Image (tube, rainbow, N blue to C red; front, side, top):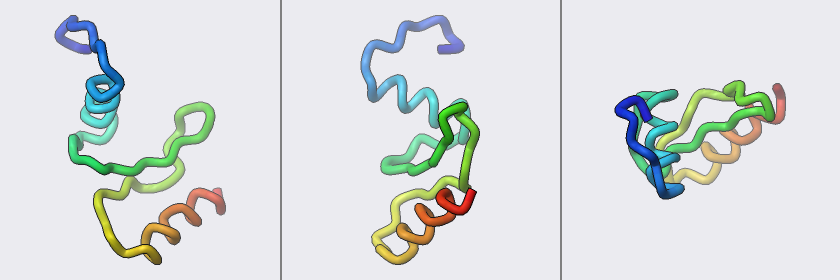
Length: 63
C-alpha cells in the first residue's frame, strides 16, 4: 500500500483497493469492472432491494 506495508490478506487487499479507487470502505460494496479494470457502472453499496440490484447488474451488460 501507500505506506509501504505488505497487505497479507484478501480482505486487506480488497479494502485497500476500495479506498484507493472509490474512497469507500464499506461492505458489501459492489463495483463492476471489465477485464482491463475499467469501471462499467457506478458502484453500489448495501441494498436489500433485489430489483435495484438486478438493474445494477443489467447496466454493465449494456456496456
